[in-house]
Amino acid sequence: MTDARGPAVCVSYLAAASLWQVERFPAPGHGAQVLATARSIAADGPMVAAVLAALGQPGLLLANDIGGDDAGSQVREWLARFRVTTTASVRAGLPTPQIVVVGDDLDTRTMFPYLPGVADGLARIDLEPLASAAFAYIDCYRFMTAPAARAIAAARAAGASILANLGGDPASPEVLDALAGHPCLVIQTSVPEASPDLALATATDLQARTGANWAVVTAGAAGAVAVGRAERLSVPAYRVRVRHTHCAGAAFSGGLAYGLLRNWPISDTLRLASACGALRCERAHHEPLPAMAELNQRIRASVPINWASHPSWPGP
Image (tube, rainbow, N blue to C red; front, side):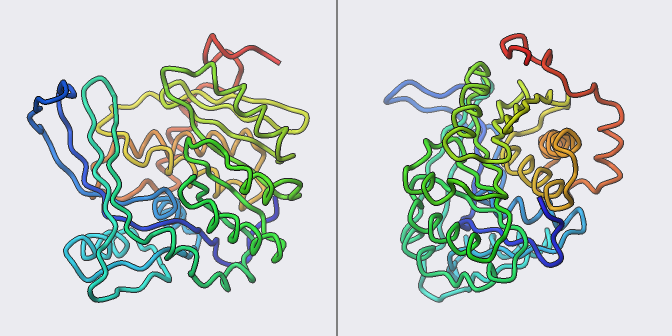
């Protein structure tokens, strides 16, 4: 992957996130006391841009417009706090997209997105910044397949390297067709932490279907795997005091993007990505994201990348 000479461009959607914590999800027809609440951001792209900003990498977020309501104010405050520059505008009378994420003490998370007009808004965003981008991060969730494919085409036309994130969704044929054969491609997704055995199979399948330089699959606390054209690696998750897991995968993506931007070896890139994801889980939502010195300190104390990080992942 080539080193970027200008801003990294992230393509994603913007929404205000409300995080609720309960002890256990209730049975149908019953309730559960909410033990804690917090505010954050969605989707992954804004957090990727924030991680890059914390590491000193200029970036630009291309996203849907937001409203002038309270949720819109929440989004604007978050973007300002984490120094994320975006092309999204504030439009009076537009309802700001929102997502409620409910988690319990068994590490179950359930999401309730309210995204009125987001897919249509993304289909209309100005992709001109991709024309001068050396690197593009693109969220490729199933509900935004057409806008994602459009952004991929623009990035390819510019000769930009691409990090495409499926976010755990099944890969749509339209997105796979748009990505296939791109010479500077990394594709990423996730599998449930309880099913880490799926990670290697998923990464192998995605790499074969797209011809990507690397297919990277995260599995929460079980770590991550990367499958390349002639090599495969794994990286363990760092042990941290977990306060929450919201946007941990997006923070991983931010570290991944940073290493790819600088043409680092994939092993070093994965170490940085894993550290970014781990330290995200340690910090409250309003706290600064870690700088490179903090990440390096965690990396130096870590075990090396190997295939023994999880017993269900076979060696090469």
